Image 1 (cartoon, rainbow, N blue to C red):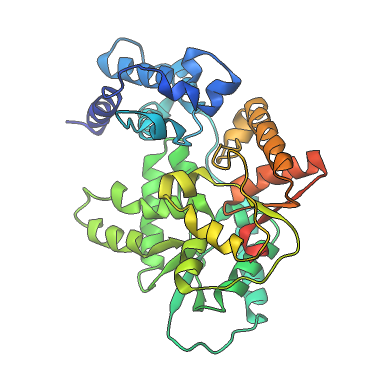
Image 2 (image 1 turned 90 degrees about the vertical axis):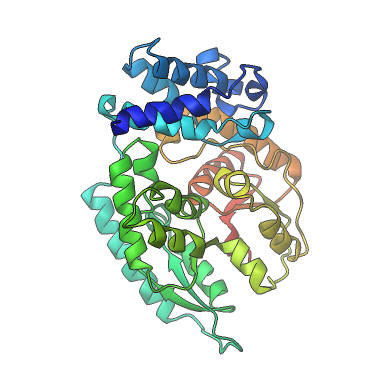
Length: 363
């Protein structure tokens, strides 16, 4: 059986669990903006199932339909059959990738910026205080692409905090592979995984302060499970990966008190995909001025390419998030994802009533 046929069978097995009840439409963010059946989780799954049965042709319209999915996973929470809609969407994108002309790779200018960002981070890290610790806890930091393209301060704050609980190693890693995976470029994604497995082979623990990276790296083993040469290495690698807030909470880190009222936006890739909800809240509550955000886990519209591909929908979702942040009365909204942070900073600029920051900046 060819890889394409195997993939079609996998899509069919997952999509066939859907009983078309429509519960997903009540929580699907894109359906809430564009109330068309084809734009909701149920419609996308129906299209995927029809594709596997040969009822519809593998054409660009189908690819465009599944590309409109945020991959947020909100639908899984309310689905009685727990249909993994994001996996169906990713596999259909892989199946129809030959029809896509959308960019997925970083430009040479961006790659040069990545290298400069790593050099800058090394320079900043050299000047950070590294207190003597009563243990030999070691972590290797994963420097994500989105954070390399933005201001260095949030990452420096992450390292500053990590140095208080562990010996921190910097690794000039490759992209986690999520952009390629999001576009259906599975071969490029797997290659990125393999490069990072080799780069972090000696690491004890890998800490990332971006939910997208953490979630992708934790799932590396899944994508190499059938590769006899890489499966054991991939499993060992994925088991090393932990989010920043997870690690700090387990290490017993005590954040400083904050005068400003703080609220928290759950990144879909952290709260829903990894189940990491308590750790960031516990850390923020310890600052002494934390308030819960209404609909904290509602997608902000910021995943990967979505704001560039569908700016109107992304803006509509962000407007809902902005309204809830204002309703919370918080002066600062924090998150643990650089894609979400970019979105929230737009909301902060639009509002003028709060500012957006990475969680490391208040810890």
